[in-house]
Length: 159
Ligand SMILES: [Zn+2]
Image 1 (cartoon, helix red, strand yellow):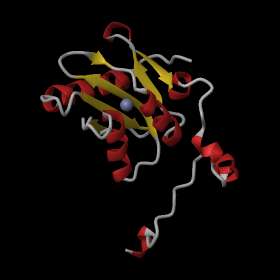
Image 2 (spheres, rainbow, N blue to C red):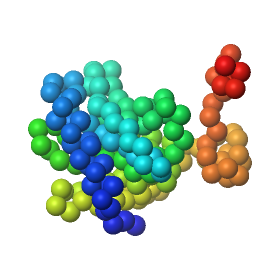
Image 3 (cartoon, rainbow, N blue to C red):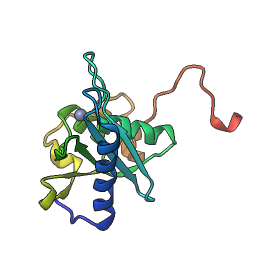
Image 4 (cartoon, rainbow, N blue to C red):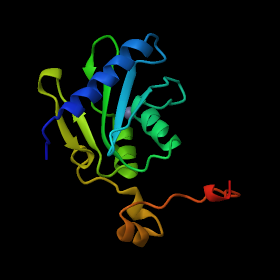
């Protein structure tokens, strides 16, 4: 279901556009993304083109958010360099967005007709990674897929 674009959504497009203009000036960085949290914080990123399969801008942006401890992202958009406008996420990003932020809205469409769609609408009949995990019952209870345990890690409260 498409959702109406709000001023905050247009501001998110402007943020990605500004990063694209400022940082996407080589063949290594050609797309910028901006993601907004439910409380209005914005995280941006650019793609890292690499022959081994470098991450898209969307993945860098959600990684930047994760680095700051953000749990839930509300909306994301990607903008191409050279005035290419809003770019829909690739298949890999759609899958990652759905698995990490199942309720995220994605801004797509031409600049004069932008719209917001749930990421799930971009992946009908998709593979749900979390449902295939052994502890899928935890996801049903909490609505979140469990974070993997990092060996030798300890809670932040012990810092
Ligand atoms: Zn991608």
